[in-house]
Amino acid sequence: MTQADGLPLPSTWRPLRLETLVLLRWLAVGGQAIGVLFVAFGLGFPLPLMECFVLIAISAGLNIWLVVRFGAAHRPSSTFTASQVVFDLCQLGGLLALTGGLENPFSLLLLAPVSVSATTLPRRVTVAVAVLAAIIASVLSVWHLPLPWDPNQRLVFNRIYVIGIWVSIICGVVFISAYTMRVAHDARQIADALAATELALSRKEQLSALDGLAAAAAHELGTPLSTIALAAKEMRAEAEPGSDLADDVELIIAQAARCRAILAKLRNLGNEGGDPFAAVPLTDLLAEVARPHEGRGKAILFYSEKTAGEPPVFNRSVGLLYGLGNLIENATEFARQTVKIEASWDRESVSVAITDDGPGFAPELIARLGEPYLTSRPRDPQGADAHKPGGLGLGIFIAKTLLERSGARLAFENIDSHGNAQVRIVWPRSAVEAA
Image 1: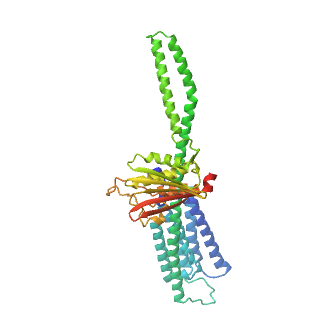
Image 2: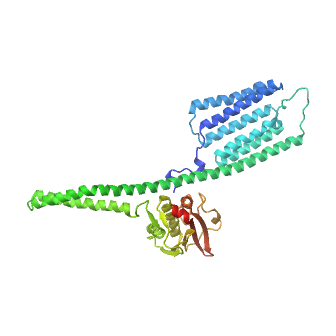
Image 3: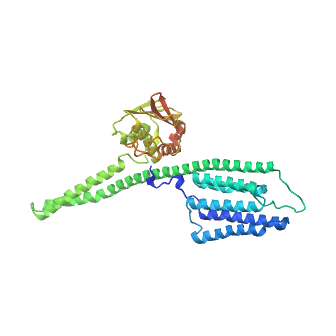
């Protein structure tokens, strides 16, 4: 799978609609307006009411302009979304500066824009938003208007307490930006890789469907072609040898034979791998999956060890074929000379081990094999290994995902100090028989 397949990397996604940003800002505008009105008229505390409502009105006006200009369904770019988050952060900082700075308990809301950015925006943008939030919190700790309070009571905060609030906000910014960004990035990778899996599976299913349609067409067209050939032969018996009619009849017979040969190829196209939904023994299934990779100059050796009668019968699902084929393809690509495919089964389980005599898995990657976008293949077109194929690191992820859907468990290891990578796939016998 490559970027050309149309699968965007997480950093290029536009996961937010403008409607979501506008809705979040309307919630903020409503909450800010209610809070300011309650403090001014409900509690009777003095505060710069006009200045506060100017800031709130700017947010409301920006919301209206965005909906009119772009429409609620618009999906903004990362830069556009980042500009909106920065605006919300600065507007909130202005309100806090007018109402007590970090002494205002609502200063905790400085973490909200950072959280939105960490969830939806690229890493560098989130880092910039987090730094801006830290700068705003630092400025508010030094410069702000007094906290709205009862004029008849004198309220003084100890400087150490204010510093503690500043430290807690900075820690919150760092933690939320780091933790949420990491979790969201992993979620985007999984979603993107699953999309690649579904695309690969869909393409394989379309090919299988095409094979079936070709075989059906060959079957349906076989009878009328036989009738044409039979009628042409009868006409040939009645035509004078050497006449134009005899030549035309011979041409019809030859072309009918050619059509039947083409239809035979189409019929074999659908039967090359057998019925795509037929149940076949495990040994036959492995031989079929490995067949396309036998012409790569590597020897593929098959071994089987049975302790419970005949080989288990698998349903030839597209996902199973694609997953096994992907692992065998990887093994033949990295093997020096030989790939061994060992099958064993008993009453409880069925296992397949695919082993190559190549350099093995990189030790630092073994524990993470099966994660999306994890690859040791070169991506530098100018490097020493430029002749080898690169990739997004989705091959093993796709294979692992598809095989796990069939009930299998996968384990990756190097079987000795020289490498020799091995992938072991184990199914519960009950899962195989149920399939």
